[in-house]
Amino acid sequence: MILRLVGFDVTVCYDASTALRMATRTPFDVCVSDINMPGVSGYELARQLRGVAAGRPLYLVAVTARTSEEDRVKSYEAGFDLHVAKPADPLDLIAAVRTNGERVAAHRRGAGPAPSLPRATFQFV
Image (cartoon, rainbow, N blue to C red):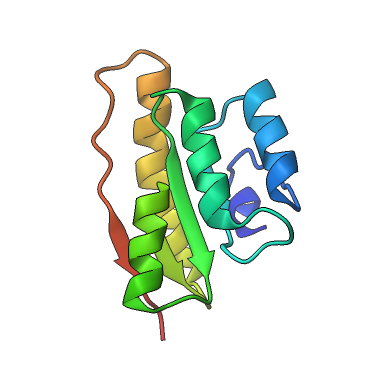
């Protein structure tokens, strides 16, 4: 994964249930997920991750082929902070994860109040 190549500590999960198990064992700062997955959808994963985080800051990114306005709204309603249309530009994705992930990690380390995470949509052509 491109995020690992630029120095992020990355755990790869191939389905939502594995991601949820991992989130309860080792909380993480950022989750990049597809919407269309076998079993539990990315929307439901986002809702459940927000529950597991229990108010702790968590930056959720949807990278998906779903690009309609309705899809974006559903992403935000489910708890995603960023909706990125496939194919995602790797440099833009790295920048978004780095900037917001660092804010979340700083809060986790006790370096200030919980960040107010912006909601944004990137669509790349």
